[in-house]
Image (cartoon, rainbow, N blue to C red; front, side, top):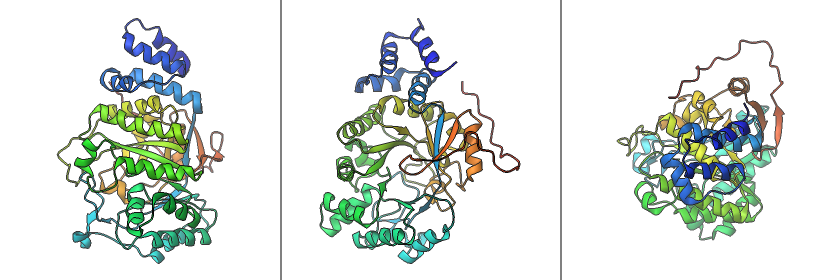
Length: 397
């Protein structure tokens, strides 16, 4: 049974409430759901219902395709001037002995380590320190592009940009134009957390506000450039805070069209100031992916970071609206492991990632950062080697 047949059966289900049936009909008719309907989905919709709607949208847009890319990360430092309560990764400057600070040459050495490798993207994000200023990053981006012009530079969040532009006494428009001219090609989605000040002031009070985060992305979009967006969920926020967050993203996307991917980020409670807050369940994670796909009707892609939620949950998410599971990564990605991610050594070969996707009946597509197709692996056969084995999918009651 395909996704459309499943949704049609759902619409004919006499036990479905009138409210949920109305939302399902809107999805079938390609109509936008409202803020209140988004909250209703969180409060009353069962996982199977949400999966049917989200998978219908996913397959209508992308069929069975599931995207990934070959990337590597550079994390300049885990020291930071900010004190976010949820963060397991950063160390305050007074804890310098527990951290690292790469020089520009050390970062360029990481780039050079991948010379000859078929990676397409370098993802640069980390803590905020005064020495990593506008001049530092503009020079770094320029040197990376000089060394390897084909490598896409995806770097820094509005948290870093707000800080360095304020320090340099330049406005967002001037700053983003400078970064673009230096070689920056897209912006990752981090630092969004939860936009509403009622929650943001409790978990990330000192850094840029939700409005400032959105304003920096807007300036970037005005330059004709693309970016991603995230939401940190599963901590002290309420359901309506999540919908408020997505509503602000949806509104800006209506205006600029510059976002390409939304990434829900699961709060992990290991070794941070919110370790008393329990983590969300796998069922809640899948519900959140599905509602994100339903609500953000003007976003092309929904991504799940397999390294954060585990390979098995990433496989499950492909039936709940997700069409992208990020990249091959490597073990320099300490943001995940230090937060208590399921994958403590987040690296997968291309073959492993392809097999992971194929095991759940999806078509693996290697993309570049901007979703241009690099290789269609659906009918690709790797050299004869034992196929990697993953855990059996758990039964969700």
